[in-house]
Length: 375
Image (cartoon, rainbow, N blue to C red; front, side, top):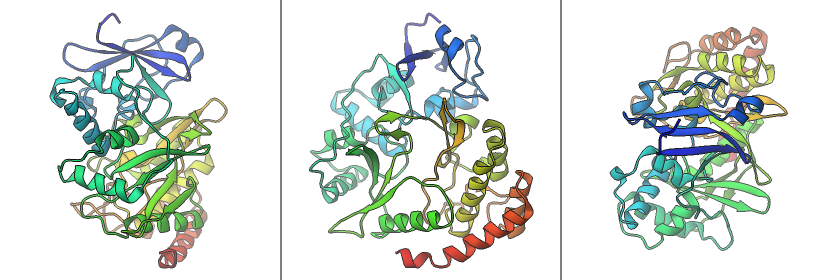
């Protein structure tokens, strides 16, 4: 690959490969020779470990701005993208004048997971949490969402310009832990942070693996939800890719079924039973607690040399709806009116016993009946 519009992709200081923009504005990828000798496939369904020059399929043009899904995961979503666009405007750069390659270069070393992109255009992200006033940050986030002027744009960009998701959030470091702190968006009720915290406690009580969670104090609402990042461990970056990135599935609309997720787990984890059981628990929890924003970016895999591919801890578990009134991920092809039989069938088809599926479903139903006690 000799295209001059090129980025190098690194993982823990090792050159993974190269990204280059094609004449039709897709972004091609090729592994480095060293990575081919000693690395792993960073996206097994789309980027097998060989020396081909890979061109993304046409579906990636609209879904991921011409990137393979695994690299699109590094880019910020709605909130981070808004901050980046506002930041570029202060530099006199129109958002329409930079390419997808440029956006990855702005993210550089600050994206989700462990992939890094060089040369970096900027490296000004600040994770220091000392002296932060969460209520003030929430107010400034509200100004940005309302297209009002704020003199704190630089701070918001440094703290959250590489973050994913729709809700405003910042990435901070406290001691040896990296945290995500979420703030209300749009018409979110004052209880939204406390509610997500309550859901996390209930989910853990239901046997669902999650990162550490907490509720930050506030004088203007019921608190801000905090959770430790599972793609960081004592400052070390962990390779992470969403189901959307692996499947190259549209996360903005219904595109997958929980049965597909079970098959993906079977394939990548070598049929790891613990991960299948976790997915079953999360599926049941989402359906029974009205978490309809269960799209393909709200599930991820981690990869380490020691464990290989494993399901990431659950995240974004809270009450949510969709404008079409159904779950984003279907169960047996159904987005609503999902029965116990549908849930159990999905688990059984994924290789779990019928007895286990029934027992877990009943356990979760019983425990979420006391969800209000966490509020």
